[in-house]
Length: 325
Ligand code: SF4
Ligand code: SF4
Image 1 (cartoon, rainbow, N blue to C red):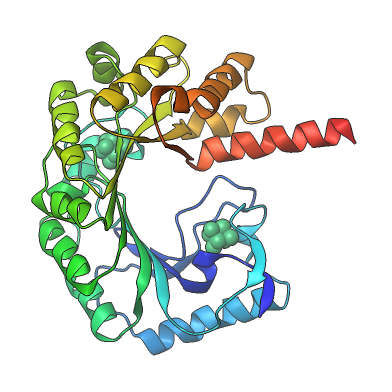
Image 2 (image 1 turned 120 degrees about the horizontal axis):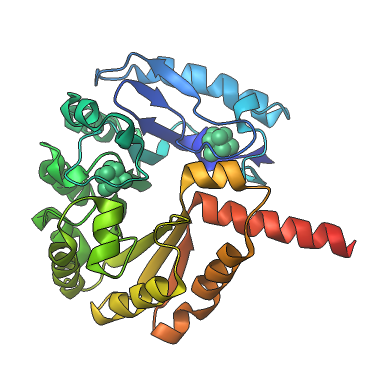
């Protein structure tokens, strides 16, 4: 059936440390963050009740009334949607502890608290989704938190998903701790690993990440890169005033290639982007254009734009279109 909706609204679930939400998207006008279960601490989910509530939202959306929090979200698309009840977009983000210390991270507000914040074990919940055939084998499972590799259940959970034959597992890891489960998933071609290095020099790495792990991370990335088949992206979050030199960006592309990695991702620091969205300085466009237009010169095969960078691109296209009309 054809109507305007989004993949998360139809078949998504997002696990946070104290809630279950539809998605984690929030940069658009409506603000996102639609909570489905409050005060959630890892209990098994009553799927009949879950889909009863979700179907109400889906039906409203089908009738042209999507949730207000979805207003302006670029995920909304008109297409045929499968109206059956299953999940095929999962974000596992129920943990906040991390062995890194990025200056742009939400945990920076109170690192001690977020590192000490006790989380629940999500393994039984995912196992229940598999046993009850709620989780589609075509699902995209994304890990983002916190740092997943230091999560107690991480290795066992990745092996569970690999055994279930899910083939699109996206893991955001800082690359400080090497994970045999990630290596296995890369070898099987079922994992995409995204590591935000945000720099190409030890000095800028230290400024952004606030840990002395520059060499360790690149060493681990090269090791992962030897596990052929899977896809690895080094990511660069552009932080104006910190790592915004074209030289640093060019060296990042070069270092990525030299590490045996052929894919990148690009984004812009969230708070800065939200504050400056209507007034982006020209030099930011220059860096954006260089990354998106010249990455192939470094023998990099693809560049994925994350939420803010994608919004910057769409905003600019919209402005150019309105001027030419
Ligand atoms: S439209 Fe956007 S905010 Fe709404 S559920 Fe989809 S991704 Fe989330
Ligand atoms: S690696 Fe991720 S979770 Fe850890 S501090 Fe950096 S942004 Fe935050």
